[in-house]
Length: 171
Image (cartoon, rainbow, N blue to C red; front, side):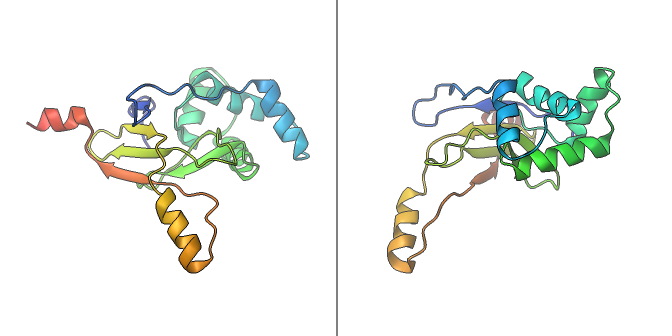
């Protein structure tokens, strides 16, 4: 488990170096998405989703979410948080990710079905997670389709290494 706030998260457009404006969702949008999938917006799910709306671009584990709830004097248990995150992930409302440390993390799924999901750079020293949008694998996907007849619908790329700050600190 990581401590909340121990991972810095950034969202950058690799081609421009600018911060990306993330697609924002309202609670009404998320409620509609749940209802379209024949699920109710329970008070517990609403509180869990509100954490993600209040922290756009963050990648929270179940323990992180539970810690925030506990800090806010909520009595929602860790098991309820796990069930809510798994359901919301299965429904495609949250995106579940693994960053190589054995801990599942979640973020609001901003993926446009016609585009690929953003990718992640993960610092193995400080744990910083940097998002980037550049799709470097399109030519490979085209090659796979041409040679093997396989159409790739999505992929996730994670690069592990040292962020600029950790490299400078090691000098």
